[in-house]
Image 1 (cartoon, rainbow, N blue to C red):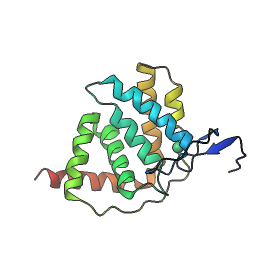
Image 2 (tube, rainbow, N blue to C red):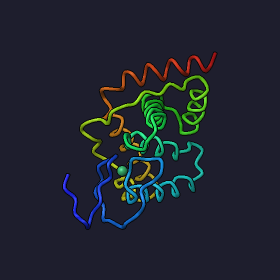
Image 3 (cartoon, rainbow, N blue to C red):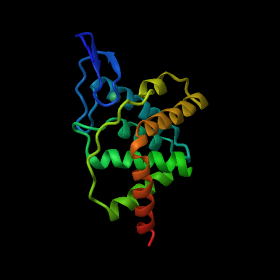
Image 4 (cartoon, rainbow, N blue to C red):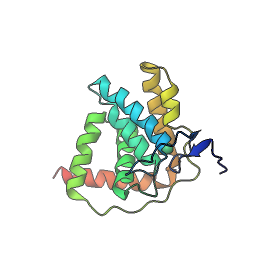
Length: 171
Ligand SMILES: [Zn+2]
């Protein structure tokens, strides 16, 4: 994709943003400008202190949308497992968090996944632009669903892996 000196593209989610010369994050295949939006959103979701712990949802959506480069395999897989559990199993963010901890205890052989094509149609920017409150929560769910859909050729594998690991962790 063409970029000039006035904009920067995020190599994870494809977001094109005004170039503010921000350093890219250490752990994600993302532009500094995209990462800044995620940091802003994280401030909002953490400050909500909601029992559902919606913050976990935005972490997982962001992780699963920034595959490749510096992003570790475990990060992408955890993001995908989180999206699966939330969207298809109705897990709250809190429940996803504890599932992640269970899985980390029984599995450490994380495969490398190739980025999906085409990329998801929604990004962290769409969530930032939505008004705070119910509309933003709804957009978070739409973003999660869009990222999960972009991985359609991997969904069966994620379901199987996740169900198997959670079963083992519960033994
Ligand atoms: Zn991005």
